[in-house]
Length: 109
Length: 160
Image (cartoon, rainbow over all chains, first blue to last red; front, side, top):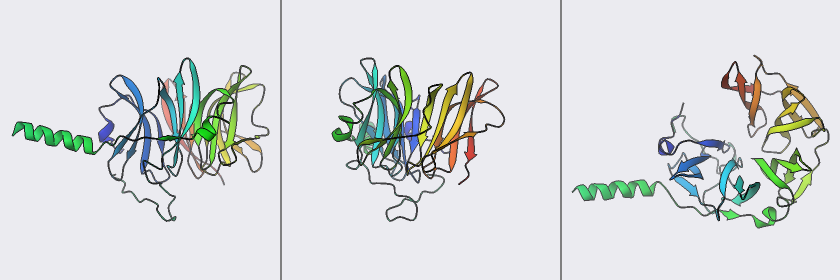
């Protein structure tokens, strides 16, 4: 088991989603009484909180395998809806092994 | 000295956390995804999105081509006598793993788009599946299963 040290104080966690090589983990956490989505970069140790407009909060998220896009199931005003977001301004892609730009992680990371 | 160490600790904590600004994709969000209500359970591939969408009081599995921004037909997948619970998509959009309720049975299935076939997958030892996740290659499944009052996760290797 690989502990997620940076997220341990923001439980409960839900809806985990990994990129191709496991470099990025998108997950919903609890922060200050609010549910919010974050992406952790297991290579650099950085956490990217993903702020949402309006009174919406995330129910479920899905990271594309190359980490270029994120789909979020959002709820607000009694309905749920899926919205897509471009992540390329935040993180670099995680390409499959064998493709230029792919990431190699140690098991301990 | 104490203030200095506190400031350093704060600086180190903040430096591991960047405030990110995602860019919404309005051309997709305002067209194809807005046309169905109560869309949930997203699963992203490369250029593909699978989800559950409510139509006329009944949920069905939908697949969207994010490049052409069109819905893709899934012949033989959605049926009147079943209710989808969970769906997950391989990176190339060719394989969909799903859980559905049919009568009093909860079934785990694999849908292959290139053949249009739906294959029932056996859960052994028996259990009730709740959530499924297929890996990007479409060859490995993680399934959350209720078994004898406990939640367990099974890994299933799929044939080619």
